[in-house]
Length: 252
Image (tube, rainbow, N blue to C red; front, side):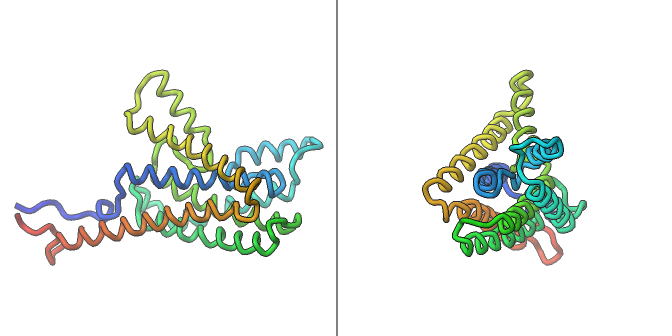
C-alpha cells in the first residue's frame, strides 16, 4: 500500500516548537533594534510603526518634544518598502501557514540592510550625525518591514515580532475565556518575554558597550536564518530519500 505524495509544504514545514523559538529570536531582535533606535537615532522606532504614527501626530500638532519629522517619515517609508519587498518574494500562493523556503529567503535578504547598518554605524564610530542617523533608521526599518511581512505569512495568531499589542490582546482574551491551548499560551507569553529581553539587552549594550550594541540583533537574525535554512534542507533531503522515482514513498 502506498502513502500519499509528499507535498511541498510538508517538506518545508518547521516543527511548531522550533518555529516558535525562531519567532522568539526575531522578536528579541526587533526589541533590541527599537531600544537602540529610540535611544541613539533620534527617539524614533525602526519596527514599532504605531509609535511612529503617534509621534507624527505630535509633530503635526507642534509638540515641542516630538521627534524630528524627517526621521519619522524615513522610518515609516522604509518600513513600507520592506513590507513591499517581502510581499513580492513570498507570494500569496506561498502563505500556507508553514515556514517555507521563501520566508527564509526574505529573512536572509533582510540581513543586507542589517549589514549595511553595521558598516555605517562603525564608520561613524557609533555617533552618527543627523543625516547619517536618518540613513540608519531607513536601513533598519527596511529590515523590520521585511521581517514583519515574512512573519505575517506564517499566520500565527497574535505574533508579529515587531509589535506586542495584538499579542497582549490574544493573551488577555484567553485569560478571560481560557480558549487557547497550553502551547498557544506559551507562544504568546514567549513573544512578550522575548520583546522585553531584547529591548533590555539592547539598552544595556548601548549603555555599557555602545559601539557594539547593533551587533546583537544582527547576530540573532543570522542565527534564525541559519537554523531555518539547515532544518529546511534536512527535511527536503529526508523527504527526497524516502520517495520512489515517481515522487511517492517507497512501498512498505
